[in-house]
Image (tube, rainbow, N blue to C red):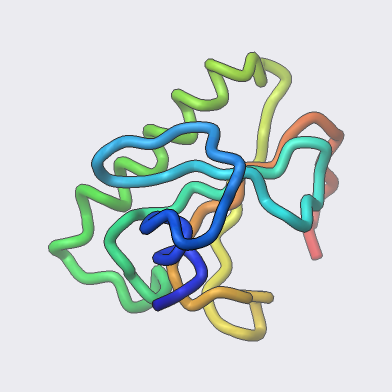
Length: 111
């Protein structure tokens, strides 16, 4: 089981911001911004590069949840969504997840 599967199964504690039948949103334990949330599908998908057509609804749901959580947290000034894919992209857990970063000015280009 990945770290995220253990969190979903409540084997590891986490500060949960949102949960529904398809995903869980939790606060990152090593935040890279004043607000750093992880939007994690409950279905284990190793990475976006390995997602299949059957995963389309879950992948879209993650983005819709990002918008819902952003509205709930009043992030009207903006936020950034990041998906890492593979070790060269700093992927640390082989379970697809979307980073939602906010409450500071983001620079471009990133990294």
